[in-house]
Amino acid sequence: MAAFNDNLPTTTDTPPPQAGAFVTAYQLDGTGGGTELDNAQLHAMWHSEEAALWLHLDFRHDDVMTYLHSLAELDEAVIEALLEEDTRPRVARFGRGVVTTLRGINFNPGAARDDLISLRVWMTPKRLITLRRRPLHAVSVVRERIDDGNGAESIPDLTAWLTETLVDQVGDVTHQLDGRLAELEEAQLSDPEYVNNDDLTRIRRSLINLRRFMGPQRDCLAQLAQGPLWLDEETKVSLRESANQLSRYTEDFNAMQERAHILQEQFWSEHNEQLNQRMYMLAVVTTVFLPLSFLTGLLGVNVGGLPGTDNPYAFAMFVVINLLVGMAVMALLKRKHWW
Image (tube, rainbow, N blue to C red; front, side, top):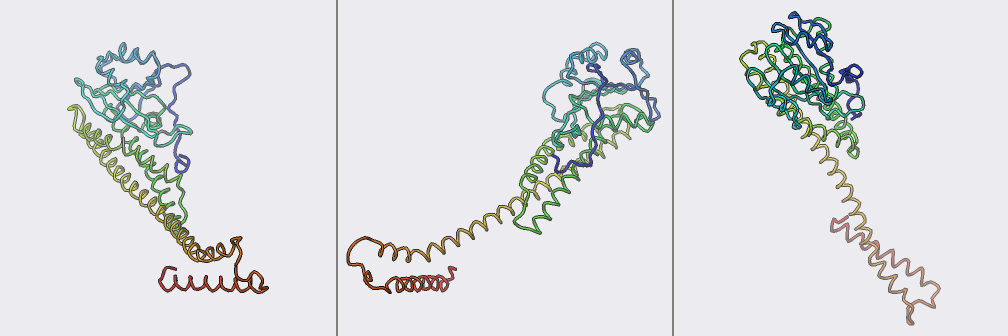
């Protein structure tokens, strides 16, 4: 998607070498900052009821069950919900915890922006577990904010930060798509015969994929904003605002899909008009030469008795006759407004 993904960030959400499923973990300090934990520190802190902990995992590795089952002691139903293949946005409650699946923009090098990455989330009042298959730039942004001391103050607040970042990045891609589509519309207006069909096809494919996931994700955030009860009001307001913002982007996707469809229809209309004009000219030429072809064919047969075979002026007379017949046919077509 190089046509419209310039100047967008690249991801830095990468685990240390040979880290297995463990990517990173943080203990929030309640003031917007936090301490990054290594594996040993995470295990030591996990059962502290006062600590607000965020664990980020790569579930491609086999040892992911060590964290989900042995460390976090999650129920089998929760683990199955986090690791299931179907990754459409959803919200499911299990006791005091919530499982949700979100989608984020793929900022990995060489990736298409409509190739969305799933983020599976398990959230309780003091614990947040996120799982991904590929690096997700939104996670890196949230980590940087925590490192700078300007991040989330609690687990619900951290969830709101994650969803807000995911939605903001959808907005970045929305603006890129809208700008590229506007360029194609401008080019088509200045030159009706021009349209970059490859770019237009890529844009329409991206819009279809974004609409497929962002619509359900909007509903997912709206549902998440309604509960559970331990979510504070500020977090609920933030989630509702993210849902409203995503709703506007979804409407933009619908509008851009219509614009792209109209642009392609205009292109095909111009193309068909040109084709019809060319076919029309060919039909006129064929009509003009039809009687001339008949005359030349009639006088070209090798039989005796053809007129003018002994007359030195016969060919010139025949050419004049052909010219007169051609002009008469053209005049007839013009009179009937067929040409």
